[in-house]
Length: 211
Image (cartoon, rainbow, N blue to C red; front, side, top):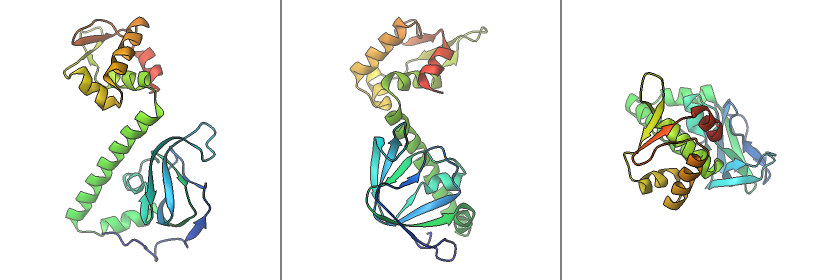
C-alpha cells in the first residue's frame, strides 16, 4: 500500500497549533494532508468558520490521511477538519499521491478506488445528516425518490419501505418523520396519503432541501 511518509514527494513536515483549520468543506483539494501525530476533529464548522465545530462527525488520530478519497476522486473536501491538539502534518501534492496509487498493481488500484468511493458516499451522507435539519433531510429524500406520474411532469414518491425504515435512513425518529410529513402537507409541499405522496411544488422542496 502507500508509504505512510512519502518523503520524496512531500513538502517538509509542519507542526500546527490546536485550533488550526486543516480542511475547509467545499475547497478544491490541491494537497492531501497526512496527520503524522495529534488528534483532529472532523465535522461541519459554524457559519463564521473560525474553527468552532457546529456539528462534530468524529475524531481521528495520526497517523491518518485526511480526505484522501476526495483527492483521489478529484472532488472538493466534504468535511471541515480542525486540530484538536498540536499536530504534526505532512502535505502531499494530489498528482504525486495519484501517481503512487497508479503504481500499485491493478487489483490494488481497483480496491483502493472502490473503498475511496464508498468512504466518500458515506461521509457525504453523514455530513448531510449533520448539517441539515429534519425538514431539509426529508425534502431531499423525497426529491431523490420522486418519479414522474404523467405527461405533465407531475412528481410523486412511492413509499416502498416502512416509515420506520425511512426514518432510520434519515437519522431521525419515526415520530419525527411523521411530524415532518404532516408539516410538509400543511405547507402544501406534499399531497395524497397512504403509500403514494404527490409533490405539487418541487421547487419549494428544493429550496427547503438546499439543493
